[in-house]
Amino acid sequence: MSEMLVVQSKVKEFAKQSDVNVGSDFSEGLSKMVEEAITKAVNRSKANGRKTLRSYDL
Figure 1 (cartoon, rainbow, N blue to C red):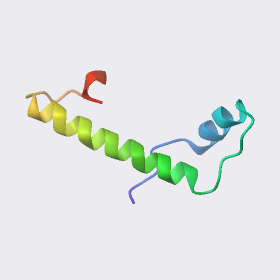
Figure 2 (figure 1 turned 135 degrees about the horizontal axis):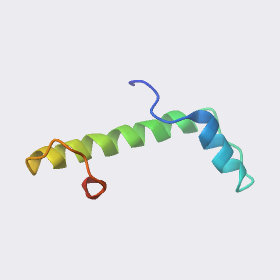
Figure 3 (figure 1 turned 60 degrees about the vertical axis):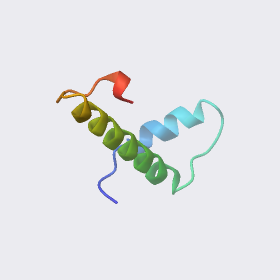
Figure 4 (figure 1 turned 135 degrees about the vertical axis):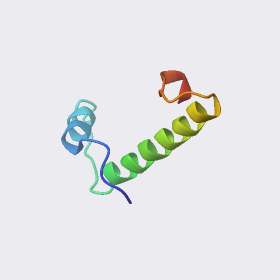
């Protein structure tokens, strides 16, 4: 796996608002999902001839 793309303390803080805990593997899994979403957005952007990622690429 590449580097962590999410801020673990922010993930825990957000989860705490819903009165739940965050397991040790959750942030790593979330980071992997973010990485996959970015990769898909990059591919879509390039397929449309753009070098700028936009929200609609997600």
